[in-house]
Amino acid sequence: MENLHEGHRKRLRERYVNAGGKGFADHELLELLLTYAIPRRDVNALAHRLLRRFGSLAGVFGAPLAELASVEGLGESAAVFLSLGNELCSRLAVAPLKQNGAVVLSTTEDAARYALAGARGLVNERCAAILLDTKRRVVGETEIGTGTLVESGVYPRLAAEAALNAHAAFAVLCHNHPSGDPTPSDADRKATVAVQQALAAVGVTLLDHLVTGDGCVFSLAAGERIVL
Image (cartoon, rainbow, N blue to C red; front, side):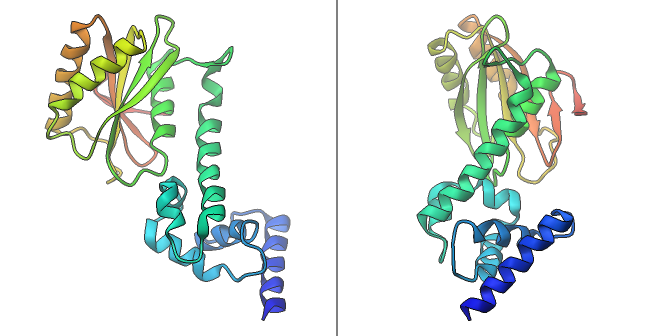
């Protein structure tokens, strides 16, 4: 049986070497990756189990480490391996925004790319404040809420406190819509106004509220989707 599994692994690797990953189904790519983290064991069923649990490749790679480790047959070491993949992809996505070692969000498009990278793999709604100095360099980022923004009372205070602690001049609010549609709701718009007022009270300007969806971003400041 071990020889059978090893033969299957070898064929997967040869397919990838010869033709790349375009002809692979999601479970096959995940299975091939897992062969490097879990030696000498069939991981086909595990790849399917992970996709069922987290819904997609993005969901697998964006899942919290503890949740990954809890999946039967994966374990902590392989969970760390998958989690590292998501971290590397996020860093590669923001690498073009770096200037002299700092991430600079000079334009709405820059901020949208940064927000998309931060939302990679999230399956639940998360709201965060990206904090910038006078040169639009990122000096901090803090989660100011999870779930929908309907109950937005705590968000303005948390955003203002974080901005003060980071000595920020500007802030960009961002959150994701797990549905994939970034169209802002009425609650999103009300939360924007509340956070803007709280930040203004401490001398910080809210530049935008970005809502991320499935590979797209809506800018409330521009009133439209941002094309990247």
